[in-house]
Length: 244
Image 1 (cartoon, rainbow, N blue to C red):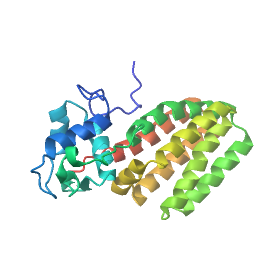
Image 2 (cartoon, helix red, strand yellow):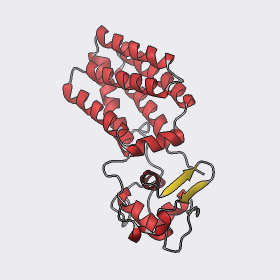
Image 3 (tube, helix red, strand yellow):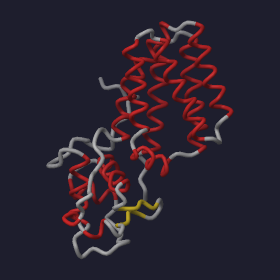
Image 4 (cartoon, helix red, strand yellow):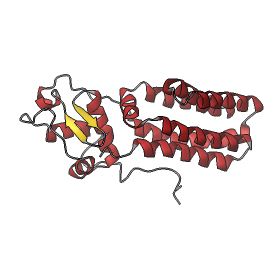
């Protein structure tokens, strides 16, 4: 039976005739930004694009973010997706068109759900008092820095790494560090956070982290697993909101 706590995309994330969101980004530009297209032209909605190409709305969102990073489209929350002057030239006249490679932000988050939930469960069994001290220190900083996104994110990273360290498994530590750092070095992550990150999300995230900590401190592996799934599921849900 599938685990209902693991978030899924809104429909099948495997695309039909489109191998990746990079391919999808190019196809969206080819189909919607013909040579006659005007700058500031509004593109079809996220749902319409998903229907046009037979893909999930999550795949469309990651493709649009990739195009936005290139300056080819602009996402205006509550309004839509708009073609920018460079995008209006059409893909055939864009020699610099270079969609970012590698897994997208939402793909990385979905991987983190699977990996870090099990890490949290293992930490609940293996943790020592010194591990709890590191987690508490990170939580205290997060609580104090709710209004400062960069400071909050740094403490958030320390909290997740402390959980991985509590397992005593260096491979798991490297996995968490790589997933965290690789995502945040990607300009697509910056774009998606610009659209959806907020102090309210950080407040909800802090409560999630407190629940994760409590389960680990009480040596409750299943509760720790579920708390981590719910936390990362919340982030995915927030970042997966429709733009309009």
